Length: 114
Length: 115
Image (cartoon, rainbow over all chains, first blue to last red; front, side, top):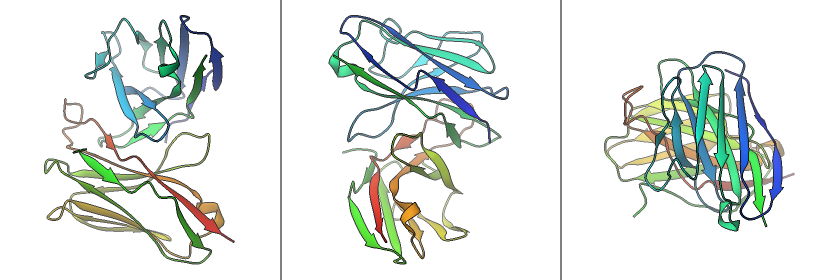
């Protein structure tokens, strides 16, 4: 399976600021996803990062709050904008490999907003 | 009602026990079923993948899918302390590359295997 890395692994941020999370894959993948994992809740898909086009956002998530870039087939960024304590969560990127729906996840970015 | 329901636990068992983890779901369109293992402060790791109904075995792990009951299970035989983790079920309707390939996750079951 692909090796996926994320930066930063964790951060503590102040309310009202923004944080950009990077996701790097060691091989080219077509589909990349960004998830949020809040304490005691299931992983929730934020958006699908499409190479060469705008990301596709799930209900409840908007581009102004979570802008995503996908400049090539091995890299994507997720920005959490104008943060509030409610944005404290683990943010994970994932990729699909092969002709199945199995997804492989990065190690996650643990974000705390004060 | 959530699309996928999973008992959050925690579940504590002695080493060597057989562990049964379960999820129920409501969407009859789901046909791909996965189990992920997540250690503390790590990303989810794909453990088992099953298409449609039936059983799949991999070492000490067995995944079962009963689509008629909308129920999936993961069995762990001879459980080890290293199995202590959160286990997440996930499923999708398939259609690779299409709008319906989104994974829906359960909330996860925290398992502790006591030595």
